[in-house]
Amino acid sequence: MAETYQYVVIGNSAAGLQALRTLRKHDRDSSVAIIDREDHPAYSRVLTPYYVGGKTGRDNLFIVDRDYYRREKITTLFGCNVVALDADGHRLEMADGRQVTFGKLLLAIGAEARSLAVTSDRACTLRHMADAEKLEALMQNARSITAIGAGLVSLPLLSHAPESAEKHLVVGSNRIFSRVVDPEASAILEERFRKSGLQLHKQNDIVAIDEDERLQLTLASGGRLITDMLIIGKGVTPNTQLARDAGLRVHDGILVDDYCCTSHADIYAAGDAAECKDFVTGEPTIQGNWMTAVEQGENAALNMLGMTCAYEGSLKNNITEVFGVDIAAIGYCQDDASQTASTFDAGTGRYRKIFLNARRRVIGAVLIGETNDAGLYYQWIRTHSAFPGEQALHRTNTYASFLQRLA
Ligand SMILES: Cc1cc2nc3c(=O)[nH]c(=O)nc-3n(C[C@H](O)[C@H](O)[C@H](O)COP(=O)(O)OP(=O)(O)OC[C@H]3O[C@@H](n4cnc5c(N)ncnc54)[C@H](O)[C@@H]3O)c2cc1C
Image (cartoon, rainbow, N blue to C red; front, side, top):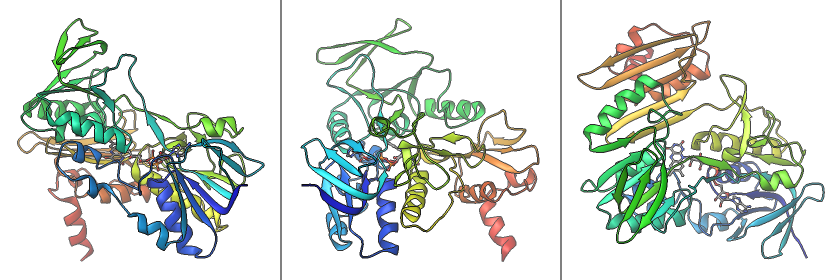
């Protein structure tokens, strides 16, 4: 016999947890269930590189504890893999044969890390807690660490690895963070990271792995790297199979409208699995960041509750610290923007680049070396603000001066 709930959320992470919080904020009585194939309370994937590198304990990754779900009267079906969705029958089937029926469903099922064609027991992606545990164990005795892929997984992991370890980064393209920042910023960061000991192997790939006591990586360039572990950071693939098999509209992600609703009126999607409007371009996109997942989880829940509420669109919003350098990339950060303005102080390493549309409205910003005013740039983009002029880029702390002007 199937268990029945008014609201079911699959995916106990950024989008799913925010959806639960929103459902319970407005509705204390309806029956709610959360399903996840991992058997943990919600945790921060963003913090896992710090845990892997020994900078924080595993317990600090958790956002809520198991008691949270009990207090909020949310049924937890953890360690349960949903294998089939019957959209019109409002029914889910789990790998162990259990069935759940729902009134409204949220697919907050995220994405999976892409792997390499060649692999080894000492190679691992980082997406789930089990990956973090494996990498943490491998890193403890590693004299040399190699990562492939120059994005928000490989670089933070190398950066938080023990200082004593030799660090190599194999990159397919001709620059690092190519999906995050503009080429000028990549060049500045490469120089900074090299000074911190990072050895870069650009326009390269790993074509074979041989193992004995250590790993021997054969590079596409013909070179060889002797290393102790390999971190695979080759991007992610959204989890769409469940939705595709159920007949929902899917492109790269599960397609949703401005209300985070899929092509089925009672099924919503949010976060890394969902393809939704970008705030700047209006194009369907998967932003792949924590804040977007939270915003969409909240929006989906409000609409599931019948509180018709349009989502204004997602924004790129990556704020991180790598090898001691603060970096923020917000909104549209590509050099084909109508206008750009930038400033770089080689002495302090402070770099700012602002991206404008044809009406000189701020649509994006890349900040290096000082990111405490990233929220201000975020607001400028969200409010379609006119660019206040290049002097804004030169202020040492734009946010502080903004507050002074308000006072
Ligand atoms: C190492 C790392 C570093 C990152 N750093 C940053 C950062 O600095 N800033 C930033 O903004 N973002 C960062 N991100 C990205 C951010 O973590 C994601 O954007 C965010 O986790 C997306 O949340 P989500 O809820 O959409 O999906 P996910 O976090 O992917 O969670 C989806 C959940 O659904 C479950 N699930 C999937 N399919 C099923 C199924 N069939 N049955 C049951 N359960 C299922 C999964 O087990 C998973 O728990 C990072 C990610 C990683 C991995």
